[in-house]
Image 1 (cartoon, chains in turn yellow, brown):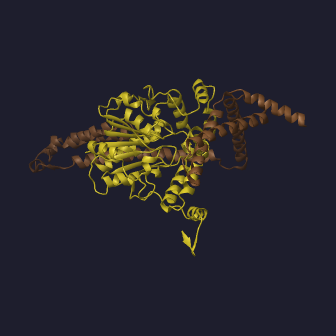
Image 2 (cartoon, rainbow over the protein chains, first blue to last red):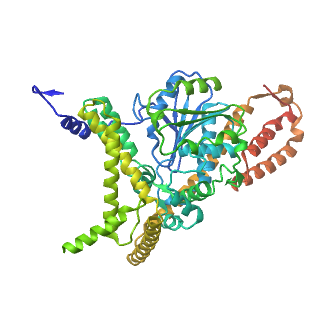
Image 3 (tube, helix red, strand yellow):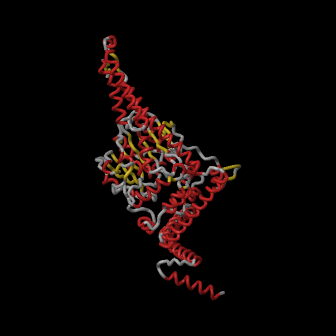
Amino acid sequence: MATGGKSNSKWEVIQSKLTTPMPPTGLTENEIIWKKNKARLCYYPAKQKKFKTPLFLVYSLINQSYILDLAPGMSMIEAFVELGYDVYLLDFGIPGLEDSDTSLDDYIVKYIEKGVKRSLYHSGAEEVTLVGYCLGGTLATIYATITKTPIKNIVLFAPPLDFGQTPIPSEWEKALRSGEFSLDSVIDEYGIIPPKIVEHVLRLTIAPITYSSYISLIKRADDEEYIKKWKLFNRWLKSHIPFAGATLKQLITDLGIDNKLIKNKLIIDGKLADLKNISSNLLVVSTTDDKIVPEELTKSIIPLVSSKDKLYKRVKGGHVTLALKGKIPSFLEEWLGERSS
Amino acid sequence: MGILIDLFNLRIFQHMKGEDIIFRTDGFQMYINIVKQWIGRWNDYRRENWRMNKKNRGMSEKLTLLGINSEDYINQNIKEWLNNEKVLEVTNKGIQRHTKFVKLIREYIDLLAFQLNLPTKNDVANVAKLAVQIEEKIDNLEEKLLILTKEFNRGSDYEEKEELLEGDHTKNTENTNMELRRNREKIKHKLLFNKLSEEEIKETLSTLVRRGEGRGYRWKI
C-alpha cells in the first residue's frame, strides 16, 4: 500500500486494518419464525427452491452459531441456500443464571424437538434433514434416537460421541472416571459456567498457547480479504458463551465418564437413547486436523445405528474449515442432493 | 553465597541426570528444573528441525516455521507437565478451596442484600425462571393451537346437504348439543391440565370434524 509515494510497513497495514470497525456477520436473508427463552429458529429461504426437504441446523452450546453465516462468501448457510435448500437454524442463544437448571433433556425435548416441529409446520414438508455441528451433532444424534418426528437424513460434522478416548490428559481422565477429581461442586456453586472459563478449559485441553495465527496474519498483512476473514474468525473464536451447569454436569458424567450414548444406556426424558433407533440416512464427517474432536470420538457411531444408508467421510481441514469455505464440498452436495426430495 | 549457588546448581544437575523429571514440592526449584529441561529439549528440537528443513527458505518462511513448531512444542510440553498426579492434586485442592471461597462470598452477599433490602442476582434469576415457565406454557398452547388450526383448515372444507338442512334433523339437535357440550368440556379440561398429546388432539379433532356426517354433512374431499 503506497501513501504519498512511501510504502507502509506491514505493521502499519495490520494496525490500520485491525482498528477499523468489525465487519457485520449473519448477512444471509433470514426471518425468525419461532422464539423461546433465548433460543431462536431462523428461516433462510432458498434462492431458487430445488428441494422440498428442508435442512434443520443444530449448532453447539459452546460457541455462537454465527460461524455458519460469518460473511458473504464465508457462509455455509449461504451455500446451502444457493444450492436450493430451505434452511432452518436453531440458535440456542446465550444462557443466563436463570438457565442454570436447563438440562440436556430440556435442550433436546423443549428446544430441538419443538424447533423441528415448527420447521415442519412452517415449511409444509413431510421430513427434514437434520444437520448437527460439533456438540450440536451430539444433541442431534441423541434427539434422533428418541423422537418420532420424521427425519429423512442426518448429517453430523465432527460430533463428539464416543468418549472412550478423549483429548484430556490421561491422568486427569483416570481421576475423573474414578471420582477422585470432580467438578460438580464448583459447577453447582457457579450455576452457569462463565464464557472465559469455558474458553480457558477448552484451550487447556487442546492448545494452551496459540500464536501461530498471528504469524499468519503478519505474513499476509497485505491481503485485505485475508485480514477481514482473520478478524471475523478471531472474534468468533473468542466469543464463547456461558454453559448451563446442569447440562455440563450431565455431559461430563453421562457422556464423558460413563460413555452412556455409545453404550446405549443414556436416558433422555424417560426414554432410552438407543442408537439402533436411528434408521435415517446418515453421513458423519470428520476432518484430518481437528484437534478438538478427533476421529476416534466420531467414527464409532457408524456400526451402531440401524440405518441401511450410512457413510463416514474424513476430509482435509480443521474443526470449522467446512463451515468457512463458503461452498458445499462436492461429496456433501451429491450425498444430500441424492437423498433430498 | 557461592557455595550455596553451587549446591543449588548441583541439586538441579542431579535432577537433570534422570530421564524423567521429578516434581519437587519446594516451588522455586521445581520451576527452575522445568525451565531448564524445556530449554534443553527445545535446543534438541530446533537442531533436529533445522536439519530437516535445510532448503533455501526466506527469512519470513523460516520465522513462520519457527513460530508454528515452537507453538506445537510449547503446547506439547505444557500438556505433558499437566499430565501429572501432583498437578492434578494441587488443582483439585485449588478448586475445592475456590468453591468454598465463592460460596462464602455468596452467603455474605445474600446476608448484606437482605439487610439492605436489595435483590440478589439469584432473586433476579428466580423471577426470570418464572417468566421462562410462563413462556413454556404459552408455547405449548401455541403449538396446540397450531395443530388445531391446521386440522380445522384441512377438515372444514365440507358442504351441507341442502335437503337435510331443510328437513327434520332438528329432532336430534338436543341430544347432539348435549354430546357436544360434554366433548367440549372434556377437551377443555385436558387442554387446561396439559393432558392432551399431539396424537390425541388430532384424533379428537377428527371425531369432532366428522361428527356432522351423521347429521347429513358431506365431505368434499
